[in-house]
Image (cartoon, rainbow, N blue to C red; front, top):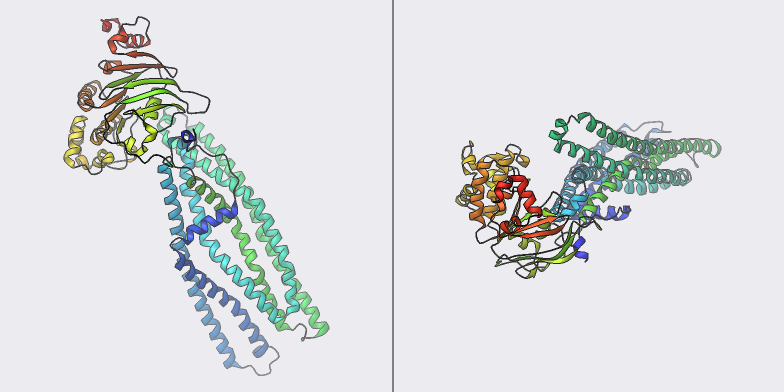
Amino acid sequence: MNRRYRGMVAPKRKVDQKKVLKRVWNYMAQNNKLGLLIIALSVIVYSVVNIVNPLIIYHAIGDYINDVEVINLEAIFLIFLSLVALAVVGAIMNFLHQRLMAIVANKTTEKMRSDAFKKLQLLPIRYYDKNPHGVIMSTLTNDIEVVMMALLQSVPQFIISIVTVIGSGILMFLVSWRLSLIPIAILPLMVFATVFIAKKSYRLFLSQQEKIADLNGVTEETITGLKVVKLYNQEQNVIDKFKVKNNELKKVGFKAQVLSGFAWPITNFINNLSYALIVGIGAYLNISFGSAVASVQQIQGITTYSRQFIRPINNLAQLFNIISSAIAGADRVFELIDQESEYLNESKNELTDVSGKVEFKNVTFGYNEGQAVLKNISFKAEAGQMIAIVGPTGSGKTTIINLLTRYYDHTSGDILIDNQSIFDYSKKSLRKNVGVVLQHTYLFSGTILENIKYGKPDATLEEVIEAAKLAQVHDIIERLPKGYYSRVKEGGSNFSHGERQLISIARTILSNPTILVLDEATSSVDTRTEINIQKSMEYLMKGRTSFVIAHRLKTIVNADIILVIKDGEIIERGSHQELMNKPEGLYRELYTMQFGESENN
């Protein structure tokens, strides 16, 4: 069934540059139409000012300076004032469009980043299994930052280029159509050189973005596991690993920068070649045919406008490296945004009034296709029963819980709650009725109060305190200087593992689920605390269907049903006493290994 494999990472796709640019433009246009219009107008005015300046100087040379016996100082002063006024207008327009472009670029990337982060919350666990966390973080930070820098520079430059090419081309023809043919003839050579370099360098910049993501992945992994690194004296090994990734980034970055760097000197050479040809050919025409064909005034005007005519291509050549990186980065962001949500096309039915009856019917599942972790699992849990799941490490115990909560979807068989398939309910309503306490808990940045209220934000302080008391963590919290308002660092690093476990249990108690899952919930607390928690759990599990995964078999002797799993199959089931009565049973063997023969009697 297709729904079983939603969220799997798609194969590497070919980047459609036009499509990426169109999508970036659509993000820019959202709620920014007026700003973009003002930017366009201010950039146009700024470009026109730059085009008009040479025209004023052109007429000043011809009408008031060149071949004039008496210099008109008043006219020259007016020309000077005109140039100053144009400079002021140009500066204002330049400031205006840069400021507005900064606002639009930040709003655009803010929206992209927000959409990407929202999609991360909607993706299945399988996506995170197949994508390194450092790479995901790089997409939301580095890739989007590159897009913003490209927007700041390329959008105004693009408008300036169009206006400058059109305006300079028209004025060149008005000054001298003969000399204008020289830069027009050279323009295709400029375009060809620029496009050729851009195509070659794009692939390198795409690879560069991938190497940056890989490097971030190594960094994130090393920081997360720093204690293990130090414990086993692996500092040099991780340094060497980082050096390899860093060197790969250096090599591809060097190639990309060098290749794209050729654009500037090549286009600048072509620009200077055009300048030399205009001056040389113009001088020849002036000497041979007189000023009527090519005057000094015309040569000066054409040389100025030819630079303006070709300069946009020259400027774009400098932007190709960041544009190429931005396209690659934006594509990675859109690839994330385009991932299929785990909630797509799911049932809208709400799981309400749950009695708690759970049934697994011939369930088979594997995290990787062709490698089954669970094989034809079947069992029933009546409402209010406690089901214990035991077995060797890697036998598939936690996988059962992952399927019940739909972190993953089984490949065959079915799972029923109150005789209805879990696929017939929405995931959100299903998870609302299932409370889980994992072996490795996570606390979020904020206060202890906020962490306990995480599953029930509208809970009162009294309800939180009651849940904390049941979890045996109230006294620990009260001893803190700020009590329930004490700050929790990222991941709960300022609390011990056992304290994090207790707070997590309080969080589950407060959410008041119908179905309770305890995955080694007391594995990180001392024996005395464990006994107190067991008393609280007995109270909590009353009237609720409970699934308990435990290696400490003493904690599940009162379970209604004990499932013994090995290699993905249920090999034994029954009560504690029933299983202990099997002389060759795996459960009896495990229990005896922990507590000895004396406990069997």
